[in-house]
Length: 192
Image (cartoon, rainbow, N blue to C red; front, side, top):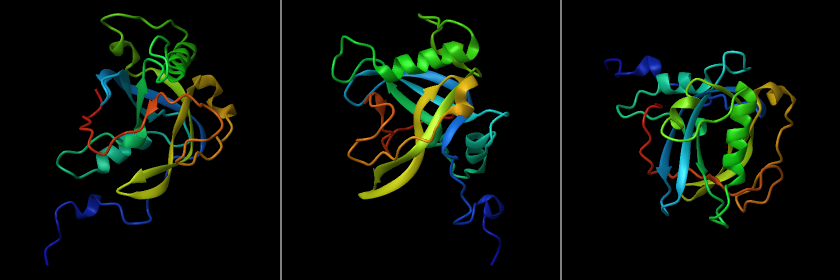
């Protein structure tokens, strides 16, 4: 047998290290505006762990190791955020406001609204808090480590590990339902 294509790049089973729970220093790889499946306005935020984080370049390394022809930025390194509250379309969502505020405080600036809104975030710092959640995938309920909320980069090391969030949605921490689960069928592109 000849050595199969991509053999050296494939990660062995059990060799995967998930993101560590708690706060992380992150770099925003890009932001784009989209519509949710139900037609609601949202932003899609791609991020990676910063060089000063305990797991630097975590998602970039996963992306580079992906040998699929149509590889995608890792789902755990992407956040879908509704801009308006899911229950009251006349109010900004808490998750969107949290993202913007965390960005502003992390970079000592104010967000710019208008045509250059998405461009302002690229390669800027932000903090994020990761915790365990349950998600349904292919009809099975699995435990995963996901971004639970954004925070100020300077306060990332002080963040406590969030309480486990079961599939039914009850948890502590960010209770706003504006983070949208990433559907399996989403055709993500390499980040921006």
